[in-house]
Image 1 (cartoon, rainbow, N blue to C red):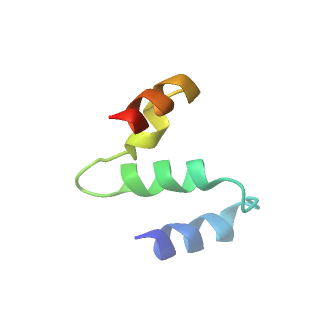
Image 2 (cartoon, rainbow, N blue to C red):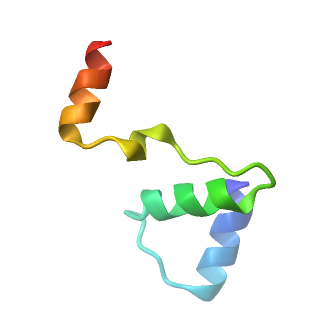
Length: 53
């Protein structure tokens, strides 16, 4: 769905390439089954702890 979402967004807004977070949220919440990448639920310390598992 990324290509469709990206086309829609670029048609309406000027979004810098650095907005990976925005595109991930847009794509994840636009589908029938709502999802969000788990990497956005952790701060730096949480990510380090998760990587140790």
